[in-house]
Length: 104
Ligand SMILES: [Zn+2]
Image 1: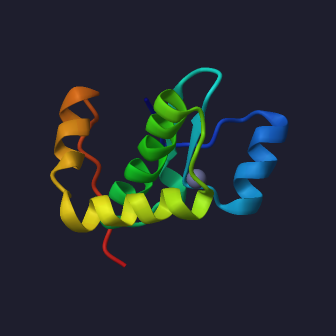
Image 2: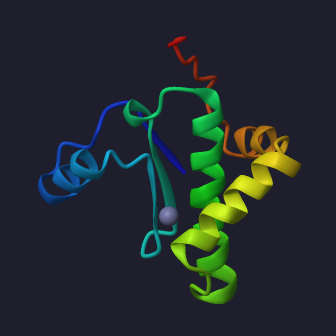
């Protein structure tokens, strides 16, 4: 689990991230979730992005990629609606720092 306050300065990955304004990523090879904070403006979005990438991780580890991108996003949205406290659990477990998002 890794939080990036700045985008990684590496060639192809950086181009992809900038082009798609990607907020997060799960890398199956490294079994690693990355969150790109510079593409995230508010706490709700941060939580949703975390749930989304963790859903990818669980999907990959338990089912070897069974769900579509759309289904993963549904799972993330459902988790946010019904089980938002999971965020605190993840935060605790991975010792994530408190992130303050500026008001728009
Ligand atoms: Zn995804």
